Image (cartoon, rainbow, N blue to C red; front, side, top):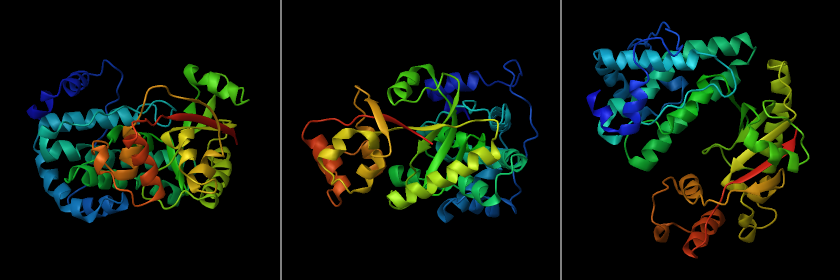
Length: 329
């Protein structure tokens, strides 16, 4: 694992996760699935077939590396600590490219080893098996995104998937919902939308995953209906009276390019968008629409109305911004 320490941020992160228990990370019984069991588990997580053999081969490399196993134990311990507590998921950094295949795939093993703990949490709260399975299968999407962007196997944005395996986020139809607590800096936005939720009180964060088909009004309405039933049923101690979304999809400038009956504009209509970041976020739409935020603007395709909107706007020298919107549940 020495090559991991070439990255300064990651080296500091690893140093803070030594083998002692001073920071309160619990020691957990970490058991990697056996070579016989691992393929089926990976397929349950929707891991693409082209990644399965490499993950099986790297399992032997991982189990032969004592430092890597200690790090694996620490990462699983961070997921297990305060399981389900909103805002408690660890922020896992990505390994640098020079870390090689084990670094790129490392968090897949972390999530595989954490699987019994999050499934037990789901069972404790009565989460249906199909919701649990579809939520955790989002790992496969992260692997697909990594290969789409980099051309190699690996897991994109592992800190995002920590939300799933910490019991905070659930896939309900087309949309994902994250059990959240209102932060101080968002309180003004909620108040501007007429939602008087105090800092620290619960709300649902709404997310729009890739590879789930059109963002149609019917699909969104179905997801919202599922959420209105799901959270009071399985988390009755939390009153989620509002949902919030922070996304480039809520940038009002999209209305300049898209018709009023388009899926994105109809999605915006769900929200009271109270403010838009002043700092540009051009990489977000390029990453979600084209798969790679580093693509040169002049090369962006113009095959669909959304591709034309994102690319033409940037080619005109303008910028995209993240919008922040809310609505009552």
